[in-house]
Amino acid sequence: MTHIRAPHHRLCRHALLLLATTAALSGPAAAVNRCTDAQGKVTFSDQPCPSDTQGGAIVVKPATGNAGPTTRSVRTYTPSNPPPATVSGKRARIAALDEAIANLVKKMEADNQESARTVDKLYRELADKERIANMTPEAARASQAVTFNHIRSIQNAAGERNREYQSQLMQLRSEKDELQRMP
Image (cartoon, rainbow, N blue to C red):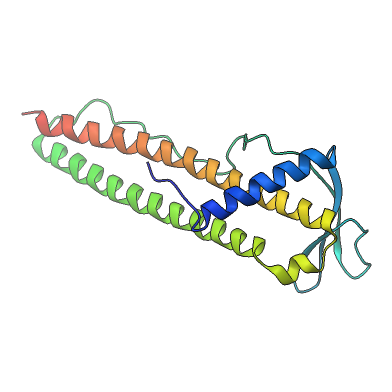
């Protein structure tokens, strides 16, 4: 199983601990406004969004560690039944299984790379001192909490998809091995 790990995981772990301590001391969930300007720049503030931006109030809740169901679906593989009756049918099925295995591996690698790019982008946003400097401390903490929750949900969803991909690969390889053992 492939794990997606940020390059600065120790720093992030310390930042997460600081954020959790701050959140615990600050009381219940904080109301924050998420505003998007015409250029697509997103800001978080405890003040209402300016009239030239879109957005509104969001509620930042403490992290539960449960990302919930994934937003992507992964198709479930169903093996062909019964096995091919002829040698040429068996060869064709093995070739189709080889192609399906190769395609699934490519899809899994692309999905992992996409998840890693998204997580890296979110970590870069967390490190954007200029963006954070323009926020109130409460809004900065809320923005960080939202980003950390987003990162965790992306990683959890990627892990679930990888488990599903691995299950499908095992089924495909098992069917291929079974066909190859047949006379």
